[in-house]
Every structure is written in structure tokens, then in C-alpha cells.
Image: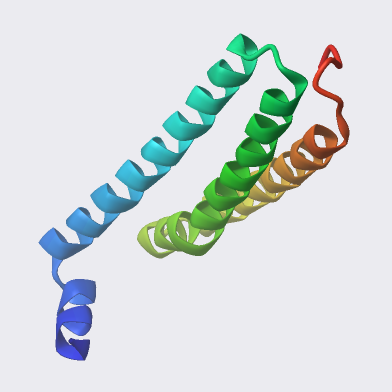
Length: 115
């Protein structure tokens, strides 16, 4: 197994496949979050809305973790432009903080709040 991992890291085709898997994972996770927001919009019962918000918060956390642990390290490894990497890291930090803030706000809202 370790030999396969080492080979995968050095094989361009395997690297592309890994990148495609990461991209699919991110798209799937984003699609799930989008679907949960739609379900929230259609829900009317406060308990149902609370449950959906809890799931949204969980999935947003998963999305952030996938980006942090898998996506951004792959991007850093693929890029040679150090200035671009620094800019991306600053932007990622801003986005990650905004996501944490959004999750905190969602957790503190009541189902009938306008936000």
C-alpha cells in the first residue's frame, strides 16, 4: 500500500485523478449544503428548521475541513508562484473565518429569524 501512495505522488496521471476526486468531493459537499439551504427555505416547522440548520452547520464544517486539509495543500503543492500562494492563503484565511462566523450566527438564530 505504501508503495502505491509513493507512486501516486509521483505519477502525473494519479495526481490528476486525486485532484479530480478532491474537486468532486468539494462539489458534492457544496451541493449538499445548497440542498440543505433549499430544504430550510421550504420547511415551516421550527423543529424541522432547527434540525436543518444543525445539518448545515455540520456540513459547512466538513466543507471547510476538506478545503483546509486536502484542497489547499494540493493547490500549494501545485503552484510555483509564491506571491500567488501568499495571496491565496490570506484569502483562504478570510474565507475560513467568515465561514466560522456564519456557522456561529446560524447556531444562535431562531427558526423564525429573518436571516
